[in-house]
Length: 264
Image (cartoon, rainbow, N blue to C red; front, side, top):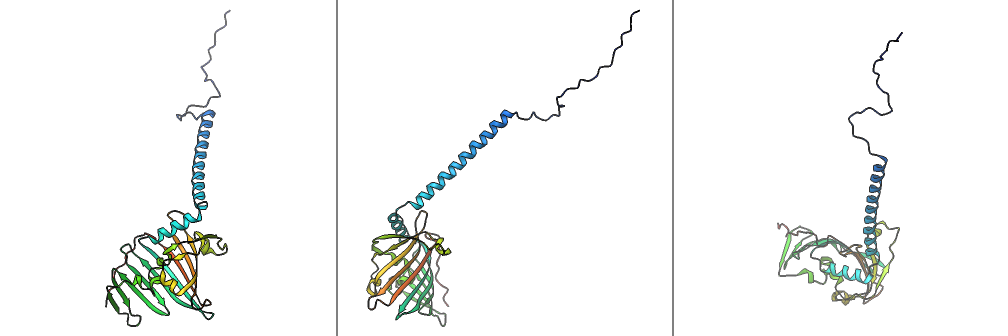
């Protein structure tokens, strides 16, 4: 007798494949390797570029000759159209140090000057605009106007009104690099330090003082400018009596506006 055929229902096949979810197929191991290699090479290029820039700046800063830096720094500063400064000058007479002047000032591109501070204990506030000088009386605060003058050429005020005049040299002379005081935070922020013994073109200084020495700081990066200077000298009549001038400079060739004072 023939046995009946039994048909079993169709059952789904079970496989190890993950069900399709509609998401893109993840990258293969090979694609991962290529992506990693590309990122690594890009990182190397960026590091190399940064290192090259740093090294170029470093060698330009450290290995430029002192003569080049000092000459350019002084020339750029003397020829600057505008700047700001602070100036402190002291006199040592018979072993006693006295404050001669304490000044803050500025010069604008239109060749106007303004200084404010004290000279020999007296308050000063002076404007030089063109050939007109404005002086404020320290007692009643009134202004005196003096026309057809040029305070920039007055010997007693030339250093206070225009301290760049202290760097009018016939000859810079020997240049000696100096080490900065590593424990002095303010000095560490300044540029390269040098000692000079120049031949001056500023004749009023030579008329009263001798043995002039300069310690100057020139900015690290171009364009080079004076950042600070300490000038010392001995009196021609008595070398025990000495002059000391300390000047800091800033804002070379920056926009500076100096207007005449409001007269009362």
